Image (cartoon, rainbow, N blue to C red; front, side):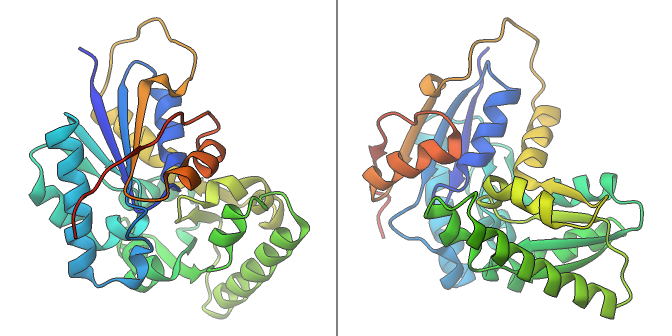
Length: 271
């Protein structure tokens, strides 16, 4: 049986999660939806985010036959995971708890740093997930990084300098709090595209945890598949939908997925 896995994001950053899933589950079929008409979710209320996310989840399950959902959106994972789980009759996985679990496995000191968007940091979802695993987490919003990624400046001196400023501030705050962090969690699905710059900027020996990779590993554990002949990674096993700006999705999506996304289909989920 070939499973169908639905992947949801408010935009297209979640394609980094899909990329990690494709590498690990090449036998699966994938359906991705980006709710581009209503982003950014971070400026919306929790109730509105829950409603929007539930509509996308229902579309993936009811209309596309998804048997498993991955919420490849940190804001929706932080603020609406319960609502999404209540809206559909299939297993639902967010990106925050897998990221925290990977940090727990990587950290020896028990102190971790988290960089994310404003909305994710304000939710303190990573701090709570880390605390539940016995970790102390210090979070920092890095609002300039998403627009730099979307501009394509993923290997640009300006981006490298911005990263250094953010990390210097975060490390100084950690030192002031008496923390000894040895792990950095990337709490935004855009940030994997900056991983090389981030790994160059962190102190020697600090581990960088990609929550997209961690989420994909969690899906593999939850949804084990028998080994079969692997096929080359192509976007042919993926159908992509967007609620607006399909041309922008096609242009930027291929950068995030590192594969041609093909023709993105427009869908109207209502208000």
